[in-house]
Image (spheres, rainbow, N blue to C red):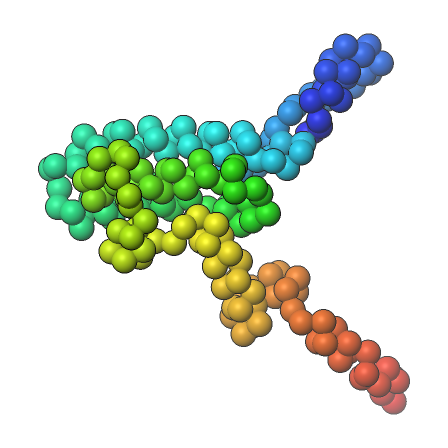
Amino acid sequence: MVCHQSTASKARHATSLSYLPSLYLSLSVRYLGATIDGYLAFSNHITNFTRSSYFHLRRLKAIRKSVSISVFTSIVHAFVCFRIDYCNSLLIDLHKVRLSLIQTVINASARLIARLPSFSLISSFMTQTLHWLPFTTRIEFKVLFLVLKSQLCSVPKYIYDHIRPPYICFLSLLAPRFPTP
């Protein structure tokens, strides 16, 4: 059960929950790889993601000189960029300050591929050579592409039922509702 921090602290000190011994109040819940907190700020999710991504980047730095650039680009894309794209549509409405941590992971990945120093400018290399979008643009592109695919009826039905134009819903009201004899 997810709750706010003040509620969790009150519940821990309360003795009225003794009849529910299996109830555990948590400040965040991990579900399908995303850590969700009571405020939907995703601060734990972003912190965990950033920490694990930098761990993988440090490990990948050791093999950088042993493989070709194209192979290394594929490996970095598999370990880091795939994780960036997973569940990122949950972060669409967050402040850019929170999302800047994920953007630093993308920048560090591009610097590792390009073999550039830590404080060099990387945005042109990311867009022109790697064809990577900035993180906020990546999220918007993913959501808009999903909406486009749903408009073209090329998504699963459970997505199509939730993303369709309102005029389709009203067309069913115009159909005759008389039983056939």
